[in-house]
Image (cartoon, rainbow, N blue to C red; front, side, top):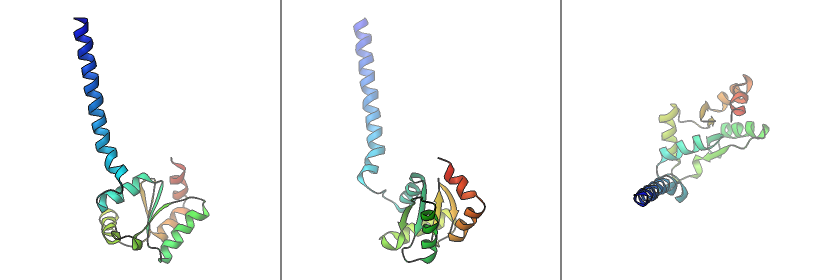
Amino acid sequence: MARKVRDWAQSRNLSLISTLIGVLLLVIGPWKAGAPSSPSAFVQNVIYSNRIAIFSKSYCPYSMRAKKVFKDLKETPFVVELDLRDDGQRIQDVILDLVGRRTVPQVFVNGKHIGGSDDLYIAVENGQLENLLSKE
């Protein structure tokens, strides 16, 4: 009887472990394989996987201004240069749906949308940026 219970418990543990490995492979597999498959998934991943995220265009003076704010603060944002990506227009469409703006830059800190360059400067002035950056 004790052997049957032990065999059943081992079988159950093995089944549970196999299930957990399967779930992990489903979750981690696509992430390890590369970028998320859709622009929407990419945008969400960038916003929530990075402390500071900026959707930018490399030639845009407002984007350069926003990046300089973080450089001056000795912070390193994750920057997506939309003009240098094949899917940049689709990403910009996702951002429009998400925040109601299509303009660049669009700045996110700890998953919170700050806004564009002018909004970022206001957040610096009123202490909002410092508060967001102090949250880990």
